Length: 247
Length: 342
Image (cartoon, rainbow over the protein chains, first blue to last red):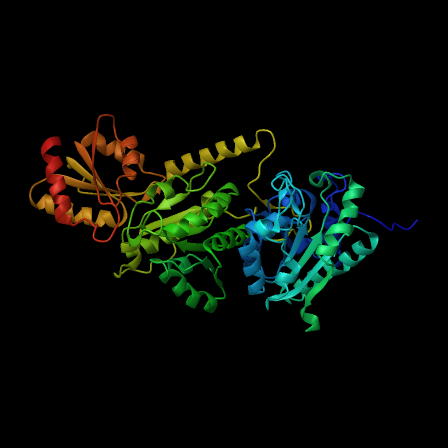
């Protein structure tokens, strides 16, 4: 019998701590598949951030540096500049990347650091218990926006893939989702491209992955998955926003 | 220059007076040597680039002054928590806040008590000449690698901006440990390396703290450095570090020429603090006079180090334009306390 589905080599054979229905597991898997596809596992350095994504080292079978909150792109810069033959990626959440770490992400992108950034946008701070994130949707209720996000006071959600696509240093900027088989296949292709660009030393690649957080959204896994399609994708359209191969 | 001699090829920094000579020089030299110079977007960016670079096992550094060092504390704490080496040069300026650009020693507490959150310490070396800026910078890289913790070269704007002759001593031959913990990509058959400071398991964090406590003790046992001038028969011992120690040395010479038995104890390592040198000297001399460019910080360590009942007097000139004491001023202080304690 032909084995058609197996755990990628770049992922450890362990249980994750992620909640039922959380999309982190799917995004982890797609990143690991990309590392396997390009045969990068043995020369990859992962840079973990603060939040649910911190346990990167428990699940990925690669060397990992843990960063202070928001600083992963700066840490990755230090690692890549000293080991330019290694593949360096960061894995960050929305609070980490689009709030406390805006300076680090924008400047690493603008310098065109030859790294891959995986940005998981689930519109909330997951690990700290569901507070309002920079990507929380207008009107969305969270533990720190109990009346719903008021964009007249809190500002509008950041669309990071679009924002970064305007920087000359960025080689690739795209947004994906993993809520349906079709979107997973598309995401796999795009994440693979992002890592291939680093192998080819094309420059900074940014992947925003829309994700569910059933626990903090107060939803069942299927409801949360549906919310990605009904509410997240309309506000954060999927697609490739910058691709220097097309310029 | 010392950093280059020590094999450092990576620098990450941000402009701030009075230390901008360092990034300016290294921005010119590092690219020629195949290294990397990054002018970071912020002090926070710079310290985290140092974290990332050190994690891969290379020698790297950053530098700054007061306000910038405050911003770097987050990263320094993470480096300490991750047991990462790395050199930080702090050319102290006046504070708090924007303060001023005059010489200050008011960041002694910030440097020697760790500076950031979580109860850690870093190695702190205090040069008092351009020669020592050179020699201690090389030492900082060695100690940092050996003890796997950040090391700081703590000077002030007088030492940082001084022009004086010095010898480009070659890098001392020191047995340095390998870095099997470094994150370089995990080749087949190698264990996974993780550089991290998160410890959630039962007892893990506590064990980490006791391990570091033991390492600090090891530092205190093996790495204390200090300099004594005219202390053999001294009845009054001045103590000061950095630029202040130079003024104190002149004052001691002036006192000696008047027949006053004064001496000078200058700590070179501020962490570890040379407690035993103070304890030994306090058995022989009659009193200490601590001089600092602050309202008194190192004096706490001096008092904790000397024998019980040893008098420790204080003369401070908090930082600011025109506040550097003159040798004559210190001589007056020596005479004032010499009369009562001798």
